[in-house]
Image 1 (cartoon, rainbow, N blue to C red):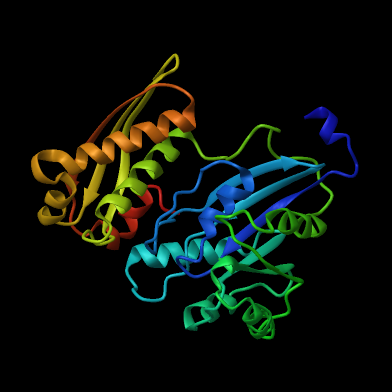
Image 2 (cartoon, rainbow, N blue to C red; image 1 turned 180 degrees about the vertical axis):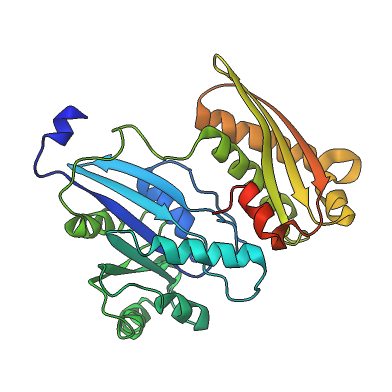
Length: 300
């Protein structure tokens, strides 16, 4: 750390990753930092918190901030909180990555575009570029989106395939200020293991019950203890109705067991040690539309 701090050419800054739901923001950040700290899902509203991912390399420290997808369809307290997280983040970063999906630029994308700050370098990132069957259409599409805002650069990528991510890093670095690092060289996030454990369980809920369970569910860590390399994690999944609880538990508890098993395996991989995990499902009606309750559950 001292050696990097004394290097006058070192660059460090915050980079916000914004876009409508489901354009691949979390996947992009995980690939850029080389670790899974932001959960992913095919479903909208997977990311509900501002997640920081840190990558230190080549005389640079990239501090990426994965934001929730900007919500336009519903106006409950949860979605208002998610949108506030997006707009607040945009006021305090050095670079903005505006993510769109190749070939798609709709009203939801335009609503996020209107939030982009005029005084911060914004880079247009066209994700899933590998999915465009007719590659000749990529450049006209890029011009269409770029005409709507004064972007500093346009970079087509495929986050899943890692296509052009090295180029994207190079472009981002050019706009980072000369600063000493804010995190240790081996840090990958500023979030606690307790927070990451909750996110892992929530990802499995979306993965195994996403098509049936409405998004009025969340995950609370009731107890997180560490004894040497063993972590004991006790988790409550909050749902809105008894019928939602039955969906999560499944026939003879099979679905909840699968959620628990997959969550435990992911935690052990991320934390590098054994995990004892217990998961319960609790009914708490109206939690997603209660401002005070949302703050108590860790929503900003």
